[in-house]
Image (cartoon, rainbow, N blue to C red; front, side):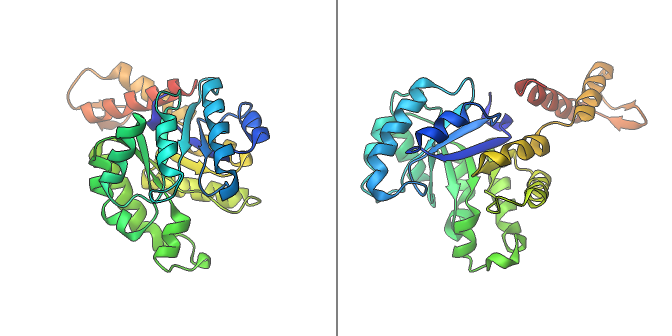
Length: 271
């Protein structure tokens, strides 16, 4: 699966064997084994070993990523080195504010990097980060970004909207994938669905998640609508080149390209 086709990207602690076993039964598109926030300092080594064993075993066709610890911590360097030559598809790098951070991780690990944008500096540098060597995608880190911008949790996402759109623009200009931040309220399915719909409308490819119960909603919202896919197939079949009428509307080559992209996404997820 191409990274841009991923709808649901689930974080789980790499130090939790039960969670790793369970994720193999879930329909998420990417598994992100976390060595950073979800793991206490005294279990970092255990988590790294667990992540290496898990990616070696694989996840039945799901994309596999490892989020390493931030630059400047004692675990950052050894984790980069440990991932080189593994079956890990991507390295997730937290708190990125400069393209050199991504380049360094890519150079050592020899894995494409997904950069987390979690600060005002990161947002302002998002274009350079996205276009930099080794960068395959961007994640919104909305929790840390909200704190950095002094936006109260009760304010919702209105204060983050400009930053989110800036990150989407940076990714699209660089031709890479981009994913919305996590939703914290585990018992609010309606809220999760609304936030996924908002992220989809902003242009994100999918959503990062923190609990297995969130996977189904993310897949539904970010997955291609069955009727839209059927319409796209008809459009592709009917198009003969140039501007022309199709089912009461005008289409041209741009619409054909969009239709083909939608069909490819549907095929990638088996729809």
